[in-house]
Structure formats: C-alpha cells, structure tokens
Amino acid sequence: MQVHEVAASSADARIGLIAVGFSPPRPLAAIARHLGWTGLVLADPDRALYQRLGVGRAPLRRVYSPGTLATYAGALARGHRLTRPVEDTRQLGADAIMAQGAVRRLWRPETPDDRPAASEVITAARGWLG
Amino acid sequence: MPQPEDVTIDLTGIELTDAETGQPVQLASIGGVHVLVLLRHRH
Image (cartoon, rainbow over all chains, first blue to last red; front, side, top):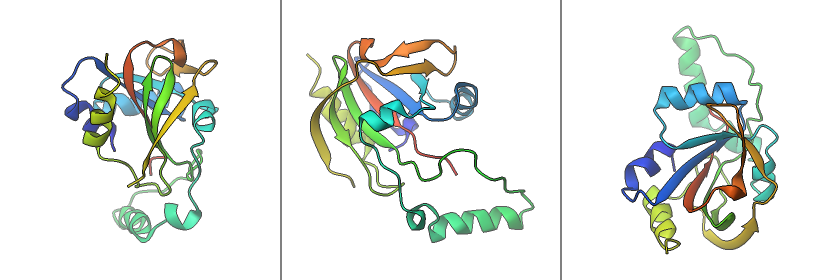
C-alpha cells in the first residue's frame, strides 16, 4: 500500500492519514513534498514505532530481488551514479489502524512489497469510527 | 498479502517528529481514527 493510494481511497474526512518514515525529518519532508503526500508525515529515525509494532527486516535476497537489481542496472546504463545507502535497506514497512491512542489492526509484511490493498485498510478503519 | 492482526498496542511514550515543522509529536495524543503507513526503505 502506498501513501497516495490511501489518500485517494479515503473519501471519509474522519479518517486521518499519517505516514511514518525512518529518514531524518528534513529529507522525509522533502520526499513528502516531492510526492505530494497529504496528511501528517512523521519521522522516526530511532524506529521506536517500528520496534513497538514488531515490524521486521527483510532478508537480503528479498531486498535485492532481480527486479530491484534490474532497476539499478538500468540506472547505471543511463549514466546515473549509485550511492551507498545511509539507511537500513532491509527495514520493512507496515500498515496499521490507530484509534484512541493505540494500534488496533496491523498488517506486517514479510517482504518489501507485501502490503495490503488500500481499500482493505480503509474499510477496516471505517469500522473504528463511532 | 499480509494477513491483518487484531491487536491492542499502546502507543504511549512514542514520540516522533513532524517532518515539516520539526516539532515533537506524541503519537498516542493524536485523537480519532488514523491509517498509519510505516514506510520501508526507498530504493
């Protein structure tokens, strides 16, 4: 699930959208502006929330899949310089419903692209509205 | 797709930073219902 998919799927203003990343605040804000994310964008460089929710890390073979390697190869072929990542490339994401200060439903993926459909998450969120 | 888990995980004490303003945010103090999208590393 992508941030923009949630924003597009939720026509209910009672459901907020919060994106959490582990990049430092300024680079994360720049990404959010570049991609036009709506909603609150929060930085968690210590990954405190990731740890609280038990969000894991992917094995290397899952992170550097043939598709990802092909993307890098294509970028090199186009003359792009690749830089060494400064963040944990194995950190997985997750999706959750937060209500009344607690997480009530949680989707924890086993691979980087293993995310629920935005419609599934929005439908679940509606169930927590009063 | 991952299977959803019904949980109750208290977020008290989780302090994050508003990326735009740099201000601290106590996650548990945000009222209402929200979808949380935890990002993975972006290639």
